Length: 409
View 1 (cartoon, rainbow, N blue to C red):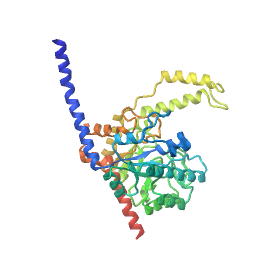
View 2: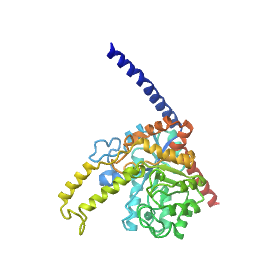
View 3: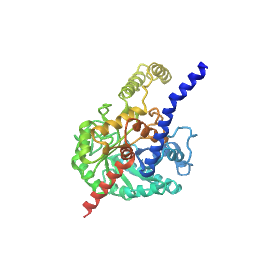
View 4: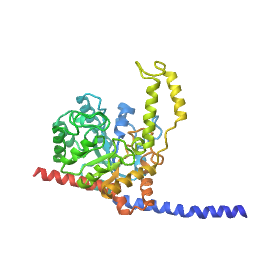
């Protein structure tokens, strides 16, 4: 009898939790039926290129769960995650020569369009906010394109205009390297922000109706771009610097400028940008590898890769990576909403751009509803969840389209 009573008490205690979970799930489904969930950054095209080579043009993309290297994205999982539209990053390495960057960017854009052509019942190209809404009403995922690095235009406004004609929706002003006209957050600065040509790029993006993306740039570049642009900006995948002092993240001072500008910060899931503890561990891990083997002159086990690998494995066993969680990503979302305002926050996962190193609970594209449910548990209203999920990005896109029309006239 005592055991039966204990079991009954446990069931009664868990029943409200299950009921709340079902209620959150129903709320999320209701919101995403009318508001398309829009992710600002997913590297799936580049992952397909890198891992599959020429097979990327014909590979069945419905279910990639059995591939040798784990993908965060496939069609079945996008549907389970209730994704309404996606900015696909057409990233190429910033270390390539400029013309090769252009060639590979064109190939990446071609791949996105090819995927839409191969799966017309699932995907459709979208360039405007209305096209995203139309795709959502038709039960399709709107495909938008983000060019993730200013080096990919090879210093040419004509190349930028060509990308716009092909459907590119934003340009990230830099990637990991400082370029001839803009400083990156993760490289030594050379210009104290934007050069005069960099300011011309921002103006041209406004004229083309392309969004100015300030992820990856340093704070001086952020401020310069915000002072020049006539349209709202985006940060396609960035976090809050107040929670993790990574230079890729956005300071409270810049968040205040984003609020004035009308832009949106789309919060990233990459652990080095989410967790300060993980960022510090990552630096220690890289330092340990260098300490052990850094040819041609450095390292305690220089020229002995097997010994270096064994010693690094021992270090890793003694110093495991800190856990990063869905709740910490929600903390970044809440901070951006608190400082910039709930009208200025969105989602920018960076799926398939960081491998399997993702927060617990956010392992792939099926998990957007879980993140939205976490914010509901914290008291977010349905209206505010709709803004976060896609409403804010649609507003920014519409504003950029208005500026394009004004500049054309």
